Image 1: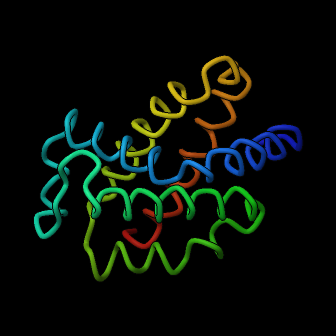
Image 2: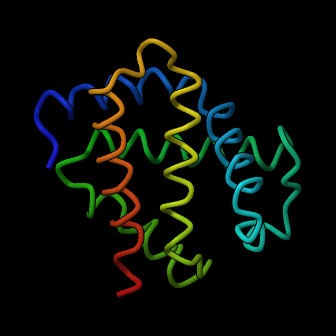
Length: 141
């Protein structure tokens, strides 16, 4: 699915974006809550106002987990197994939300990467985020 060059590009992108994990993650979550208000249901116990401590913290965890997935892309299912189990059995997050967040992350990355968001980077990120969402949704089947 991903070429060797795309895999290397993904690691580079996520390593660079990890430095701004709080900003990127919270912005993507805010974008998701704005565009898809039903996704707020799973966060009723948190302050999800833009740039809140909860949103910054959770956004950072998301971005760092994605960066870890990019570094271990050849073993993505194994790397994400604990997260998949957590989201399926404990948090009971509907798997469609992973796709929605992936789209919001892609838009957020485009705004943060500016000229580095090339068509090749866009395609690689889109493929990777789709695979990431699919692996997270595996436990639902």
